[in-house]
Amino acid sequence: MAKTLKKLAEASGFGKGAKLLETFALPAVGFSLSPQRDCPVGSSRLGGGPDVTGDFEWPEDGGRRLDFVLQLNLADVAAVDPATTLPRSGLLSFFYDMEHQPWGFDPKQLSGHAVRYFPDPSALHRVPAPDDEVALAEAALAFWPTRTLPYFGSRAWDRLQKALKSKHGKKIDFDALDQLSEDLWEAASPGEDAPLHWIGGNSANVQGDMQLEAQLVMNGLYCGDSSGYHDPRAAKLEKTCEEWSLLLQLDSDDEGGFMWGDVGRLFFWIRDSDLARGDFSRVWMTLQCS
Image (tube, rainbow, N blue to C red; front, side, top):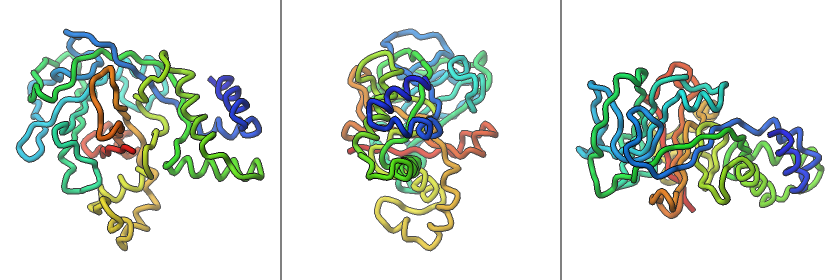
């Protein structure tokens, strides 16, 4: 993969910064969907009904059960990325209110998503989706290793373009740099124009800084307008906002039959300290679209 990034950097006019780009490239596990019914219990898959344990309590938002999005058999992830910081076994499941599609900027709407971790896959059984009208079609997941560069709008991208400008001594072509991020993804993905579904790594931002938004919203500040960012607490909270790391991003997917907002993406973020403890109870989610 290092050779691939170097070649892409040279082709994009960033050959002198290839080593610098390497320091910003984060490993991730990409995945694609393969329509399949009757996937085995405990398997990595999207849609249908989730596999849960007997003590499972369905997460709700305003009395409505959240919709099941996907589940990851973490042994599958570890097989592709032996250095993953996720637990190496168990099932990690993602839920979202697909009827109302909350955006994530309002602390009062944090119940619109949920992540559940089931350490023992042998104790699982399948339950039906709560709302057939919005339930996603069942699909198996295929995984592969990849690396991700920062995308425009992220804090890492800001640092990267400043570092490249310092090294090159000239104005950076922002469009070319963003295209390089996409080219690196396409070089590893199995198909052309593959949706940007991946676990970990740099986030493929559609809009602005999600790390700061996560920190503010999860500390009770509303970010649907500028009020949260201008709150007296915001400056102090920003100092530690990079403790938030991308857990999962799920792109809109024509073949999968789903779209987030206007061809947007769902992003799930977790604090590094929570991830180290295997605590997925305080994951933050946001929807971004153009």
